[in-house]
Image 1 (tube, rainbow, N blue to C red):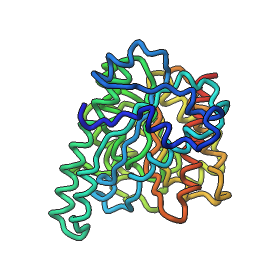
Image 2 (cartoon, helix red, strand yellow):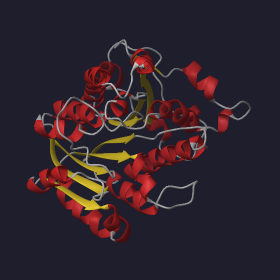
Image 3 (cartoon, rainbow, N blue to C red):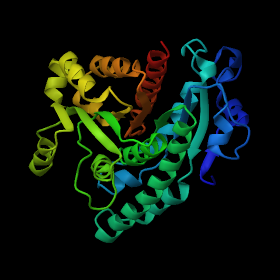
Image 4 (tube, one colour):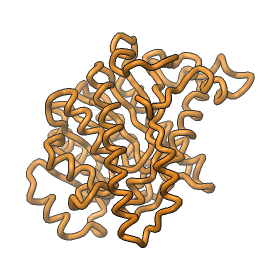
Length: 331
């Protein structure tokens, strides 16, 4: 696959801090030295988790949302490989695959004007190209019996992930989405706000629980749509903060009987007032809880917008989420 850039030994060497390589997680993680076909190359590999990145901002731009999520992958993979080697309980069971290369598409953003409808329409068409690539990689990983962990990009990538997983399993997936947004906006061309509505309409998503929805900023027409669909449930951000255990039980009942995915829209952290160097306990509890189910099929952390002021905090939080997921799923 021409747009998948492998994470190789030289990349690992370049990222690992000098003088401490033997103490780092990166010394035990598995890599591919070459790529023929994703499925064939990993199906017999003794790993449980396959990590890859989606550095792109098209989905957010196409929804007139803030960009900056394309930076997440590069920073997180560096942070991850430099963790203490004992941080992850099963480091040899982890393969860092690489990332999808969307540099050309990202470059197009420089010429797009968010105020021009034609440019928004162009961006939405290009999101469909991203969907195709994401669908293929996820399909190959899950078909090979591994659990994908996807970092970066906007919530738009939930569509490609659900589609790829559904096609690999030949069934619709359930999903828990920790997000202040529904992902269920109208199907008006692909963007970060309608990944789940497209997945549901096309038969890739079955039961869907939104954990931490900001109901005050959600359009009435979207809420009315959600309330009409029995397979879709949600809790408000207030209920998530005040009654997180109850909401986790509700979501558990809805999604865990069959294969399901866990989506974390990093933007939900903006709804919490927490210390800058941690992520909220409610999110930690939810992540740890769902990671322990055998039907857990993937983790996707999206919308982690990085800028000059928050880069360390965001990088650390995303890395910690990834580690907590693997450790919880490995127990």
